[in-house]
Figure 1 (cartoon, rainbow, N blue to C red):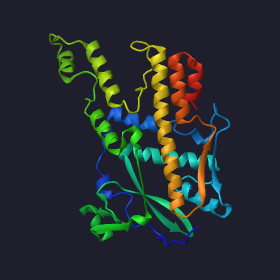
Figure 2 (figure 1 turned 90 degrees about the vertical axis):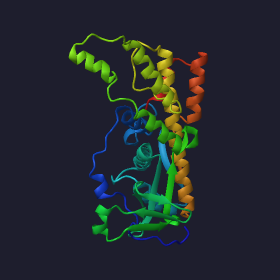
Figure 3 (figure 1 turned 90 degrees about the horizontal axis):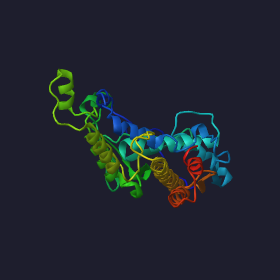
Length: 309
C-alpha cells in the first residue's frame, strides 16, 4: 500500500443540525421507489435462500485485505460480521444514499491506523476541480465557529447513479416528476364532490387510474419500476413477471456499478485488492432471462428464481 497522509478526523460535515430540524416530506411514490431500489439489491444479512452459493469476497494481497475489509465495513455502523454481510451492508448503504441524493460524497480518514469512510452531506456542498467546499448554515456557525469547511478532493470519494439508469441528472428529474403526483390518487375536485355529496361531474375514475399508472410507468422507464402492483386487473402474468425481472436488472446494474466504483477506490488508495461477488445472477443474466421469457424459452417460475433472493 502506498503511504498517504489521511486526517484522523473528518474535515467535512455529515449533516447540519439546523437543516435537519425541518421535517422532510416523504412523497408516497418517490419513497416507495427509493425503498424498492435498496430492498433486495443484496441478500438480506449476507445470506440467500435461493442462491446458497452466494459469496462476497476481497481478493488480493493478504497484508492489505484487512485494511480493505475495515474500509468497506465503515460504510455501515454494525460490527462483528462476516465478509458476506460486511460487503452486502456496504452496498445497501451506498445504494440507499444514492436513492436519496443521486450523487453521494464520502471522506476517507485514518482512525487509529485504520482507513475509514465518512459520509459527506450533499446539502450546501460544492465539489470543485481540486477541493470540496461546504457553506455552513447560520444555525450551525455558532457551534463550529466557521463559515466554510473544505477538503482536498484527494480524500473525497464520489459515486453517482450510473448513466445506464439515467445518471444523476436523470434520476433527480425522475424523482421530481414523481413528486408532482398529488398525494391522493383521486383529484381534489372529485374528493370535494364526494364529501359534499354534490352532483358528480363527468369524471371517469377508470380512465384517470389508467393515465395515473401510465404516467408513473413512463417516468420510471429507466428502472422499469413495478409500483408493487401484483393485481390481475390491468396486467397479465407475463407483464407482471417481465416488469419485476427488468426492475431487478436495473438493481443489478446499480449493484455492479457500486462494486466497480469501490474497486476503483481501493486501487486509488493503493490497496491491491478487488471485491468479487459470485453466486448471484448478473445484470446480463437477468436481461437474457427476460428475453428468454419473451420468447417462451423460460417459464415464470424459472424467472422468479432469478429475480428473488
